[in-house]
Length: 333
Ligand code: AHG
Ligand code: MN
Ligand code: MN
Image 1 (tube, rainbow, N blue to C red):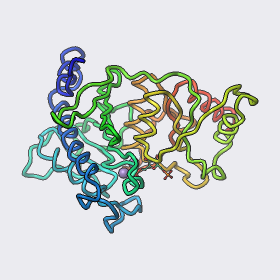
Image 2 (spheres, helix red, strand yellow; image 1 turned 135 degrees about the vertical axis):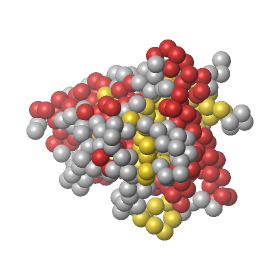
Image 3 (cartoon, rainbow, N blue to C red; image 1 turned 135 degrees about the horizontal axis):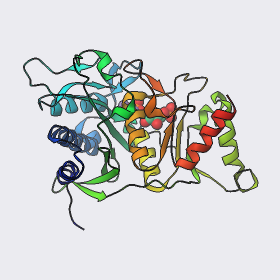
Image 4 (cartoon, rainbow, N blue to C red; image 1 turned 45 degrees about the vertical axis):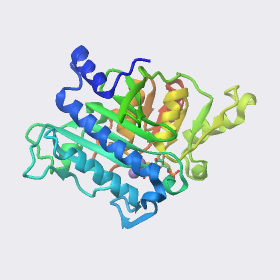
């Protein structure tokens, strides 16, 4: 197998398609370097004293894990010096972080969830990092939240790393989606899937069924029909998976198809997941891999954000399955 590194892939995207200019390439490489450090901390677990709670809450009102904070700080340290950022925003920071005055600034914004699936850290189940790259609008200070409030279709790049049995980065710079596996010995991200293609159909759904009493009618109808199996209107049996780490559920779906659902419901009127650093990067990747991503009535990448930590309903994956759920939303509003 030829060993195409992350750097080689990004240089070739710039040569062939004018994508991932040098600053974007350096930013993605530096995020990749931070994720190698996060992977190493996660792999050491209790031996590194990184498990358990940090004793603080984030702006979402969620108790932070030590690794939420450690991962966040590693990404800040790995990228704030680079000269390509105007600022950054994170699930774990209340406000957008401008680049310190003594450091060079650039034209891009980094938005990220440093550790996704935090509830799984202490039980040794896969977690991940999700990131999104936007251009800072002309004449807007990156200290201003407004700079980040861009629809997901304006993303320059998006990626996630899943810290699983293998450490894998999934990435798009707008020319399809690709995957790299971390070669720990050499310390390189090596391309292991050139072009990710999500099967259009599936027999596997991912949803937290403990929320079923809160679901809206379209979701209830869709899941009931899946559960009815071969005797029901779908005429086939379905399987269910729910890891409670979006990165792990989405990686499975881009690998073998499926539909991931965390819809807006009676408990989470806006949805549970965050638009800017969970729904948008994942939707960009899924669409680039031939899948679809809606919030119910609307394509997620078209949503105009109103606030930095805005939540959003998410239904994404195999395009024919997502289209069926979208049809139920249209018919049952
Ligand atoms: P985070 O750990 O960054 O807060 O994200 C967790 C998210 C997402 O990864 C996952 O799909 C979802 O929360 C799980 O929610 P439930 O625990 O309600 O199932
Ligand atoms: Mn998350
Ligand atoms: Mn998180």
